[in-house]
Length: 414
Ligand SMILES: Cc1cc2nc3c(=O)[nH]c(=O)nc-3n(C[C@H](O)[C@H](O)[C@H](O)COP(=O)(O)OP(=O)(O)OC[C@H]3O[C@@H](n4cnc5c(N)ncnc54)[C@H](O)[C@@H]3O)c2cc1C
Image (tube, rainbow, N blue to C red; front, side):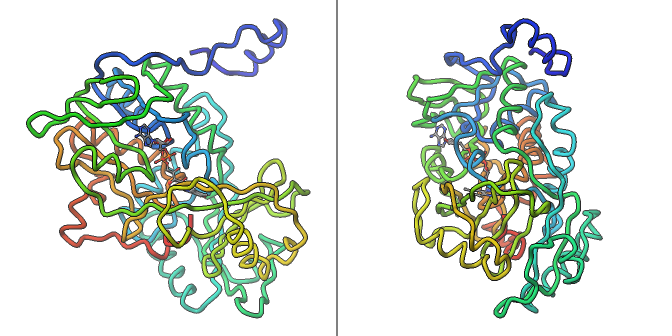
């Protein structure tokens, strides 16, 4: 892999940029791999990367039915934070946030991590209690967050209207080292590093069946033929249910579309991320100047990856009271992604009833922030059969009633 550096840019400028290599190879599948990961989103690619880096397992294929990063990883609003309530969540999201801090250096790929700070606004008495409780829990978990009053919110977000008639701003949960990163770059950076380790990223190849013998996975059927493997990781977000069905088990998940939109670019006006969960809306400003706006999920199960008109109105209406200036903005684009939601709003990282087959899904509306931590834990689980990061997120919890309730941190919030 050619090292990216200021020196390399200067050298290539002098020879008309003829010396750059492709960031990743596009090979045909081999007959057999030690491990196959289905889904080249951030979680799948990060799993492959840490399998290679931390455990030396490099005979790995990542199989993707579309193009890498074309699922939710390339469709999300890129919020990164770790201010969850329960200990297992705080551990995995904080691990991920910590890894994001120097992921650009680690991958030698600029993922544009911007720890600009994230505020979750409290706009009801109930939210004040919820977020103060989270701030206390975070203090015990070693996650740096802080409860702040309305004056501090106004200092951080001058364009905010504190005195909305329905939902005044009563304070907020502030995480100073939360922020955003460039979503595609996270997928591209991991893909380039995996390819450099000799792993095969096979795009335009759909997994259509999971082959098994005596209760153990032995390979997959794909649109490019059958491929054998010793271990299989299913990491397909909104399609987890379909893949699980191919492998012969069921998951307690539902798939729904989640939408987002961006405005025309405007001058810099807000340099933190603001989430207003009571009214179902959140907003940040991209480096290009667009206001990146997201709302809630569709109210019915579906697999459309598009936006719909009623969502624009609903989401913008929700935010206008708190940010009156956006009423004059033109919206440029909207889109959707398929997210998989569990009942307790926490993910599933687990062994499955099929030996050698592992599942990573159920990240719902908030898995982008978790990509490095999830990949780290999933790789450990696949390589060694155990990971303290993923233990609490096993499938058994639904049978045993060990729910990890994150409805305050993740029900609406991303
Ligand atoms: C609009 C929107 C906003 C969001 N905002 C945020 C946010 O601000 N912060 C945050 O943390 N999270 C956010 N999320 C959630 C986040 O995007 C997801 O949790 C995360 O990207 C999931 O990553 P993944 O790698 O698991 O899935 P994906 O990126 O969806 O990757 C799964 C891949 O599997 C592939 N696949 C599926 N079936 C098959 C098959 N049969 N064979 C081969 N390949 C297959 C798909 O094509 C896809 O590329 C948002 C999501 C959406 C849709």
